[in-house]
Image 1 (spheres, one colour):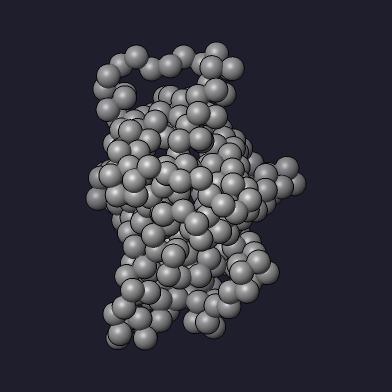
Image 2: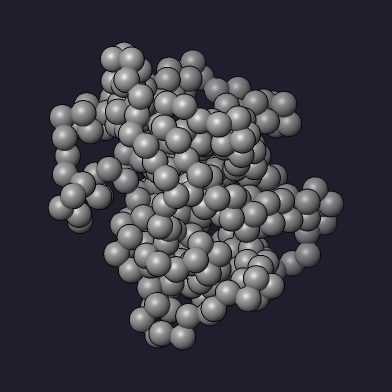
Length: 312
């Protein structure tokens, strides 16, 4: 398997993952119409956590007993779920579904910078610097000059979503240092458990006891992003990662925004400004430069062989 030649099955599973995650942005937006954002996030992590532990037990996978691993799960739940899910859900109250997904695609930018800070083998090369610069410029274009000149709640919402992507990047570094060697299902279930422990008391204090939603579509939205957008998506993501490698898996982040943009337009009649599409184009270009794909295409060279990955 090369980074420039993926099987039909790999593309199909990447496409399916992009559809699932792209639709998650819409389901969160729908859920926010009735539920406070913290309560919404608790629903997401709690039910996904129950499902994944059920999967772990069904597959008879060993549950960690080392207290150090559970402490690592707690930090992972904070960085990979509690902080980014809460920031993005809050931000999505004030910005469009598609725009949220565009900013989410910038996770890889912070991932490169965080990795360069914490890992000696991830130093910044000229190619990475160029890719990060182009991608950051794309994010700036997507935010728009008006948001930079006139700071308001919409500007703050956009920064909150970007803060969530930074937290994702920190979580990736933490997983590499503390959670290597665990099965993907156990790692995902463990970090979601940590997220529930953190978020549940906060949501009860801030939002009070959760009320039953009145709209049937709110139940459907919660069920979708908890079951499909979180539990099943994590399992599918690790499967795709093992199949195509980390470089190719980054393509999923570029497939998600078109799905979210189309669904936001069809269901919520959202319309993005032209600058958002221009920003996404530059962001996509930066990500392709980052993993070396664009340079290989220009040189007509195949990418390095990527086999199954040892996953956290």
